[in-house]
Image 1 (cartoon, rainbow, N blue to C red):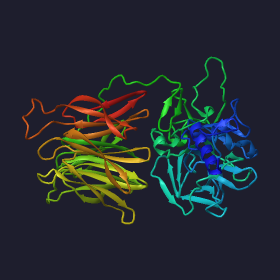
Image 2: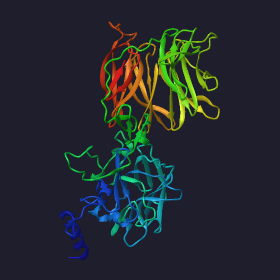
Image 3: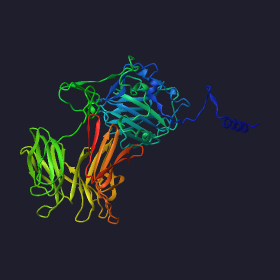
Image 4: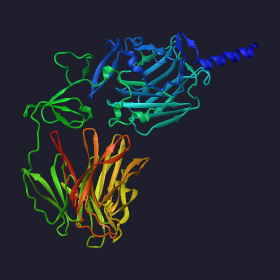
Amino acid sequence: MSAPLLLWVILLHWAIGGGFNRGGRTWQHCTDLRPLDVLSEVVPASGLARGMRVFQVQGVRGFQLAASRPRALGFPASRLFIHCDRFPEEFSIIVTLRVLSVPAKRNEYVFTLMAEESPSVLVGLRYAPDKLHFLFWSQEHAGGWQTRVTFPNVSLSDNQWHTLVLAVSGQSFSLTVDCSLPKDVVVETPFPASLSVKRASFYLGNRRRRKGVFTGLLRQLVLLPGADATPRICTAMNFKVATLSVPTVLQDLPVKPASNEVLKYPYETDTKVTLGSRPPCTKQEKAQFWFNASRRGLYLCNGSTWISMLEVKQRLDYLEEYQNLVTNSETMGVEVFTIPKVGLFAATANRYTPPGSAIYKWTDGKFVPYQNIPTYQAQSWKYFTIGKKIFLAVANFEQNDRGQEFSVIYKWSRRKEKFITYQRITTHSARDWEAFVIEGEAFLAVVNHREGNNHNIDSVIYRWNPRTGLFETNQTIPTSGAYDWEFFTIGPYSFLAVANTFNGTSTKIYSHIYIWLSGSFQLFQSILTFGAADWEVFSIGDRVFLAVANSHSYDSGMPAPSNFYAINSSIYELNITAQMFVKFQDLLTYSALDWEFFSVGDDSFLVV
């Protein structure tokens, strides 16, 4: 038998026989799509490795790594790459961490992969102030030099938890922070197609030396070969601690052990108890305690509100009348607000001029008249601040005595201690103002209801110009007899919902939800409504709801119903997987114009 024919038979035998045996183990293809939990490999089954401590911050556990024993925080790469000794060509790295303040010109390593006989980093992730560097070694494409891919403007040193997803494919590198818009970088040198990890080891939080050890907390470090992990990660409500795989020692544990048993994995936490008056409860105070001596109550901050731990829970038994507020004419809306160091106020939007609308101040346990402001069929007020400036905007529905139609923004004068005219904006039967901030910029949106008999007109979003100190047109959005704007955020995303009421012939029309993308609002979802007059967004636990108030059902081309106003109003719930709001519940209402959500203790209420 000739040599070429013998080689062919041998290759055919391999193909039919299912491969060859190396070291007693059948060879398989390198592509393995299961997540490889790098962090769990460092933790022995019996407990923690030397140089590791478990801390709980803001209700989330993570590892703190010691700089004294960098080699103790390593393991052979062969424990992850079982079937072959090559690093994946395409992959994602998922990291959940909490970074402490890093001094300028200092670099800290999240992880490295290094050959035993070489000081060079084969693969690594390194953090510097406001930058993230991905390192890799490419012998064939870079002459044996290390390639560094830098992602600028990555700010993580805010003492908060963050989840990073780094997706690598050839020359393309993409970084997603907390499921926000990805940062994409394309470099000249591609990630190597065949990077050997033979006799290489992973090192957690270091590069095999004490210098550059990661000083923060590390919760998750996962390698996902062959896939972009972003769709798998960005499904939870809490994007900052989204999880693909977390070591058992860091997973949520019972509040207290059963009977008298001790915790299998002890952990430390930076608990602090505050005494005195009610302190703020924000993300900075999460997992902190407050003791209220007057009520003898102990409260835990969950990041937004104080949760009672040791106190009789407050419940709503019934409401009783407290004060009758006599207004100058029919009141269309009330805005309650607090001016720091001045007091509590309520502004009523009154229908008729004269005498206009009024502002009341809380004095001696009740609201008393404070200031009158001329308005023209005022529909609503909106209180908001920009820096130290305090504003109050009124939506006027009709023209003034000179035939001019505009709504007015008033500014609080600290010297006069009252609101004075600041900016007039042309509007068309304005129903509502909505003020909000996106990426540090202030916006003000007005709902234009109609112009003459035309209900299909543009409503306008204005952007604050810090240079001129005025609001300027930023975007117009087509609306149909609109009544209300509702702004809300979910994770890193900003939304704006409009309640469309009437298109000139029918109240059965679509209202729309817009999402902020690339500097403007773009259509996200349309929902069929019936004379929609109000949207109300609220959350119960981790669930997000959006309620619409349907006012009446009318269609000029259809027979009149027996009752225009007896109609279902609907509550929608955000479905993270479907990335849309889906109907949760219908409630029969009668000419509904407004929803209001509130909580008392553990109970949630919705008023129509």
